[in-house]
Length: 238
Image (cartoon, rainbow, N blue to C red; front, top):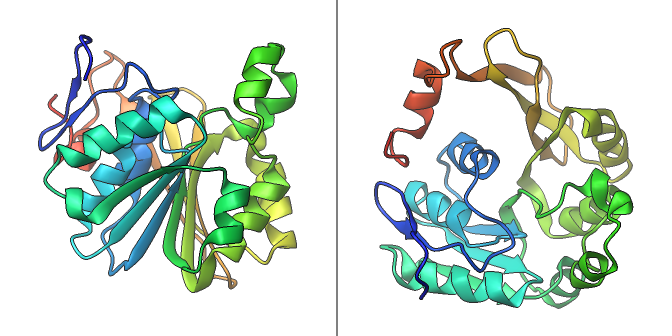
C-alpha cells in the first residue's frame, strides 16, 4: 500500500501516510474510552485511516460499523486497513459528507463517534484556501449536532473528543437538538497540568447524575500512568 512505516496495534496494523487523519493520541483515547455494549450499528464521522472503527470492531463483536470521510485518500486507506484486519466483514468506509450521508441513510445508529479531522472550533480560522476547498464539508457545531441527532434513535449515544475551549459552546448547542451529556471524561496530558481534552457522551434524554471522571496520560517523568496503560492494554504495544 505504501512505503512508510505503519502503526502497529496489538491485533491490527494501520497505514496512514495518505490519510488526513493520522494515528494520534486523541483518536486512540476515543476508541479505547467507548465501553463495550450491545451495539448493532456504529457510525464514525471523519474516519481518516479507520483505526477508531477497527478498535470498536475489536471490542464490539456484533456491531456493523460504517465509516465516512470526505477525503478520497483517507477512504482508500481506511478500506485497505479494514480489508486486512480480523473484522473486515463488519467494516465499511465511504467517501461522502455527513450532510449527504444523513440524507441518504435509511439506518439509525446506536453509537456515533467522531474525532474530527479539524477541530470544529478552528474551521473559521483556516487561512489556506486549498484547505478550505478540500474540507469544504467540515461542519460547524450546529450542523454536526443536528445531522448526528437525525441519525440517532432514542437510545443512541454520540461520543466525541474536543478541546476544553469548545466545551461550553458544544454543550449549549447540543441542548438545542435535545442532546444531553450522560458521561464526561476529562483528559490531563500530565499530572499537575490543566485539562486539555474532554470526551463527551451525549444521549437524547436527560441523565442525572452525569458520570464524570478524569484520566491522566503521563506521570511527571513522562512515563504512562497505570490508568492509561490499563485503558489501552488491548490495543497499544507500549
